Amino acid sequence: MDSLHISNSLTRQKEKFEPLNPPFVGMYVCGPTVYSNVHLGNVRTFLTFDIVYRYLQHLGYKVRYVRNITDVGHLTGDTDDGEDKIGKKARLENLEPMEVVQKYTNDFHDVMDVFNILRPSIEPTATGHIVEQIEAIQKIIDNGYAYEVNGSVYFSVRTFSDDHPYGELSGRKIDELMNNTRDLDGQSEKRDPLDFALWKAADASHLMQWPSPWGRGFPGWHLECSVMSTKYLGEKFDIHGGGMDLKFPHHECEIAQNVGVTGCDCPVNYWMHGNMLTVNGRKMAKSEGNGFTPDELITGNHKLLDKGYSAMTVRFFMLMGHYASTLDFSNEALQAAEKGLSKLEKAVDTLAKLTPSSGEASFDAKEFGAKCAAAMNDDFNTPILIATLFEGVKIINGAAAGLVALTAEDIASLQDTFHAYLREVLGIQAEKNIGEGGGNEGETGALLDLIVDIRTQAKANKEWGTADKIRDVLAAHGITIQDGKDGSSWTRG
RNA sequence: GGUCCGAUGGCCGAGUGGCUAGGCUCAGCUCUGCAAAAGCUGCUACAGCGGUUCGAAUCCGCUUCGGACCUCCA
Image (tube, rainbow, N blue to C red; front, side):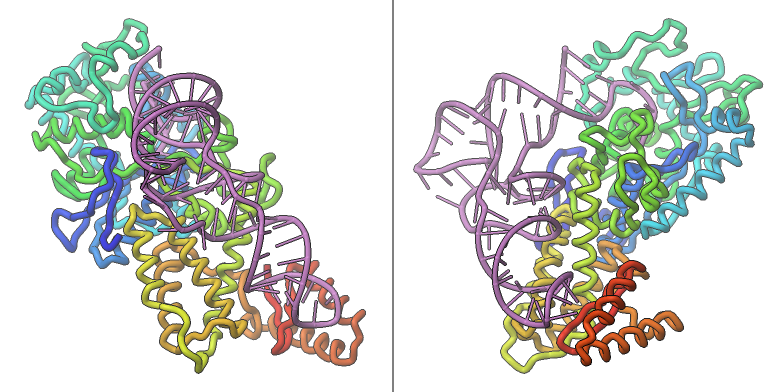
């Protein structure tokens, strides 16, 4: 495809991407609720939108990327009698709620950094926007779509749906929802089981509470996203993203709230949903007990893992699947990714050292770049992009082996393409322990160079025992010796 | 129970009317003192059953199996 197309969850169609105000693009992504450590499933979603962010920038758009931190309002368990997640954690760990928030926000940021996921332009918090949320609630009440009961305010889905569509995003119909709603315990203040809380009254035992026109309380879960997206991106903006599991009810409620405030029927042009990471075919989730933390993955300290894998390996693994498909997490798949990535990185090293050949060019570097663009233009198809990069690997290795002729221009173009797509768009960083050593590691490097020299000497004298011993011992320390036509070299990893 | 999605070779995973995706694994060969790396070659699949079509992994129907959501979840 020659221009970016995005699968829009709202219309269920692949559509040409046309921003409201080019070259500016507004993108909102639902961030984490910071009451516990993030796991790899969460990472996948943020990685998905990292790719979107990176590629939009690659295309020259000026992106305002807003990704929130939910630090209040997210209830545990069922709708009405649930406890605030942050408040509960604070009580259990005997911490101030804001300590909980800070702790897991730090964790989240650390994990994002490890996976080379870029920070958003704005990272607003729910507690930082209580005033705006109260104002939004008042507007919704004024517009007739919410009602107050005992200091709590609920959104009236039925009333709203008389004037506006509800359930379009998740393909739900009000009547079906009614039939399928589980029985509540009869204690609900809500007029209708479909209604959801905009503001919850808090009694004295609640750790997190604020004054409002309806008494002391705290905002409902969905509201912060509506308020913060509107505040920073406007009443109508380009892209809204999040995990598939947020489609209903979270995003549906978000839309209703936006519309309930502004009356504008379509607050977001393109809805994007990342699919789930699975383990043995089941969604990775805390409730399933199958969640890996990034730390367990990197150290290999988990019963389902044979060994540890680097963050870049995991990033690469995740990008080998399309974001809209479920992706199954397994040792075998991770190992395949590790080897594939290593092959790719080696080829990048080779490319840096390639010398132009005099023969006729037997490779179209321009077409190669276009193919990479086409892959990403087709709904951020990273697996196709990676497959295309591997075609490049074949060309690079072929050139190094003298089978493919590349001009200086071809080589420069390939270097540009690999840098742009592998490093910038896919965000794969060269790992410190992969790649050429030789002089850039200071003392250790100098020692290794010396050892390799000694071995080369031993080989010249046909002292195979010495040569093999050096190779074996270094290998035991994770250093690989490779004998090429132009001498030997060493690499880590 | 309702709604939706999926089933691709030994494994992972793209594709979606005709043209070998790609990665990993495995086997053989080239190179190499032996390896490794790299290259070449081979292994050619689309859950089952019907239908549409000149032609279907791709469209339609049914069946089986799996998953997600419907309750907090990225």
